[in-house]
Image (cartoon, rainbow, N blue to C red; front, side, top):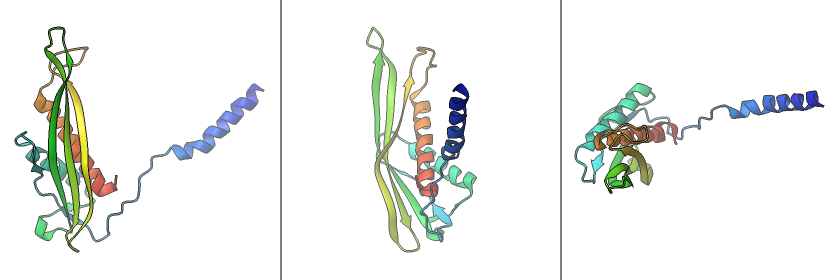
Length: 170
């Protein structure tokens, strides 16, 4: 009886294992798009200078991947435009003296993907966001962190999300 159960479980695992492989969706990117322009992201938030950082991170991801090359807007097949819309910083944890210990940082952004050859917008996604939490004091084994370090972590995630959406479609 035990052998039958073990054999049944082994067979089930063998049949299900191929279904557990990684899935990469087919990109719906038109074949003629080989060069993409990534102009400096617009920044509608009060946080100064972060648009330069996230734009460069996004360009670096395109360059390191190599599927699409970077070009200026005049010579590109497509243009990726991103707008940083909102910068929200909120205290999430106080100590007994009501001194902030932990913050949540969330940045909202919009992405527009424009076909430069046919002069039409291919897609847009609005009100996307990335966030992180960070401690400003060493608490619960978590090291203290600055707002700038947390902001750069969120901007890195935004750059990665923009890149994956353009190249891989998700």
